[in-house]
Length: 110
Length: 86
View 1 (cartoon, each protein chain N blue to C red):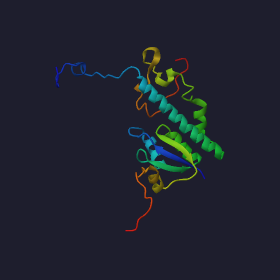
View 2: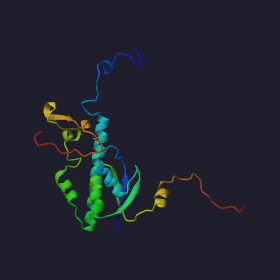
View 3: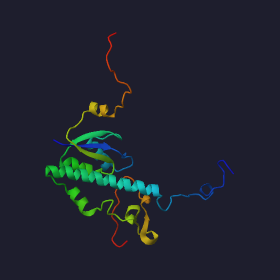
View 4: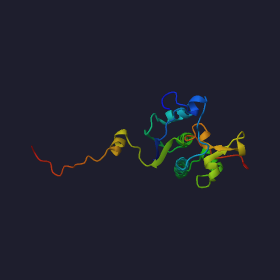
């Protein structure tokens, strides 16, 4: 029953990874927080450069392409496109290093 | 002259060498470390590369290490009302 030889799926079935298929509401809350933190950094940099009258290509590209947290659909905040997945969507937590990389855009129509 | 006050909030462990190089170029070595960079397109470009890892403020003055330490120091819990000669 207990100990190293207890009959669990993970021990007897070989490889069994238990990654939940969707985020919990707390994970989603933290994800929104992180998205807003990135938005805040971009806004700060933008304001500081605007005061100096300077421009930055990376900043302009980001502002033109990327939606802010408020503009994003829940679908895009918590899931991402994957061509191998049923209905072409998987949880964003499947993305390696997902808490430290930006993944905001998905192909249109998916 | 205004500065970016940049604090490393998230570690770059396991991230690409390019990203870690950008942090090194900004002068950030460990988490919660704060550095000041003048507001220039160069510094802004570097911040944009690591925007998921840092917290940024715009400030008028760059603080020294000593001042940063002073900022973090907690209240001593007592204060001397009148110095008494021994």
